[in-house]
Image 1: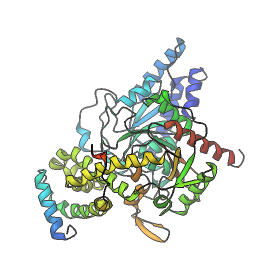
Image 2: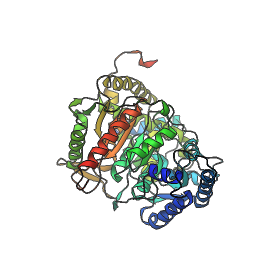
Image 3: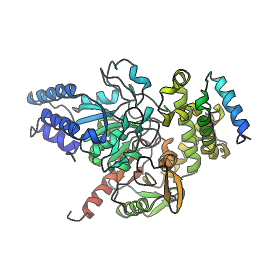
Image 4: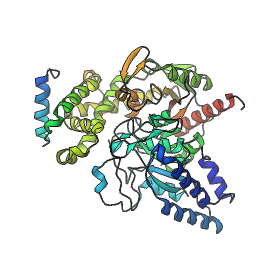
Length: 57
Length: 442
């Protein structure tokens, strides 16, 4: 879902607004590319199922 | 190469040399070499001379100035130096007032008799592996000026490798001591997370930031550990640690140089076991998520007010990191806690793990991709392949050079259980001595 360019734009707009961050138009394309790269680099973590244990304490 | 730190300290304490003569030699070496290498951003010559004369006076009065008597050292430009602006490789911090006092690590080294000679170039806010800094210029590898010294502590490694100083402070969040040590052929150490005081240091990602250092030899980094490390005096003596090599992920995707260096290290350390580090790709992703999120959160004000002042090589990572969902960060932190316990289990049967430090030798400036085993990989995201996965575990690590297939250096990592720096230092010393004996003419 997040790989859809429309959703990447929504991600950028929504989260940037939540932290009061305005992404300048000149940086927008590079930030979206970096968001895509972040998503792919972090994917193994998101796909991993942590075993239930006491490490949440 | 300049004399080792332990040799200098011995000579100064024994009055074979004065601290001021050693300091002048270091300042002369910096003046002669720094123009080409660009390791230093600030040189604190007058402060160094004053401190060196104080050391000489102490010795003349029969007092012992400490284990690092008269040893010149420098510090990555994210450690506060009294009366100097701490820039952390950035333009954003350059307009800050000068620091009011030294960082704790600098104070500790000077209290042991060392002499600070300046601040060292780095990646902006310690965020990257190349030290190709848009504001203060690239730090060049002393062994090949067309190549990077590595990063983020590039100035730290280059200053030692070029013989300007025998010892230098840096930091390591995802490999920022280990990668430049590997690329420049010097010895790097990061101790157990939390074992060295970080007061007066600009953070990148506090969950993983370690103070570390680089020297010419294992004995020098061990000496710095004894001065800087909490609990270092309680270290147990371990003559012959049992070393295992990490298999799977850590035996894949590396150039022939690295493969050869790893084979050499295995032979010299008499490694007979292979172990599997659990979920290395997940561990790497977790380190990335934690670093990205924490680094951006700390710079959020600058990202709102003046993103144009950031180095283009870090700007988009900072901006995108600020947009990382909290759930991803929290999953990274939960994984980090689980991963630490898994890593501790590995050390029930072995003392030290042997891993490669970088997947290839120092790349040339401007290289965007590199070939490994017939496939092309982007340079920047691939450099941390072997350092990032174990970074969140906070384990003590020594990285030292081992001859590979190329004339350029390559390092290996020796990783130990928490608070067992003695084990990794003993293994590193064994490897260093064994390699020295095997060199022609030794």
